[in-house]
Length: 321
Image (tube, rainbow, N blue to C red; front, top):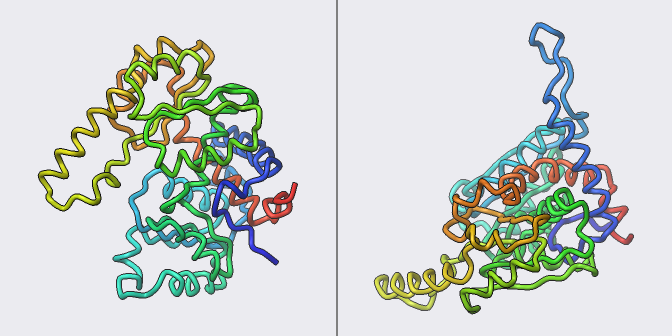
């Protein structure tokens, strides 16, 4: 039987997302109340969530920097009663540093009888699929060279929670469309055929964003992926000069300022998967429509719901719905 891997947002079904968001909303309400119940003297008598995953372990194998994704997966597993074994710098802390292949590493980790799920972040485009091909437990793609599918789940949950529905919404992606978060979000939004997706990039005129903002229910802002720019330039000084020129052009076209916010409908929101830079300056944070902080915190409830569904078999049951 095929394992319920989460490799690409292309593989999501609407039934999976609908059920996931119901559960995530329920989890978020529980989290907002209390983490624990006590007996009055401070002793913990009950966890805030049922211990679905007691004696289960999640292997977290990250070969790229991460704050929100890694911490939300770890805390999600702990919240459900499970454990984590974590390699945050996998290329240095695991046997990958000794030239062991990704496939051999995954095969070994997934063969541990207590490990029930493996979460992978890796820079290569096909890394998650390669891991899934040899793993004996479900693999979750926490960001590879192509996609970041669980971020798309967080993004759509945040849109639904803030606006009441994703149906019929006008969503404008702003910035670097090579971002894996943008790619996964576009795939997942295809499950909502009544939505409209448009884009504003650094190639557009600086006032294009002002015009797009007037007709946007959601501005989804992306950081410049400058680590991937000018890879063909070897001279450091020339490379730095080219990147600076590209950044100036990027920020001129893609910065969501208070001037941009003033053009947006009253019932609209601004999201950013973070980390953010000058494309979403801190001066806009006082606007209640700017929800990147809420979006970041939603990673916990969404990933708790996902882990629960994957372990219960519900995610797999809904894959053909």
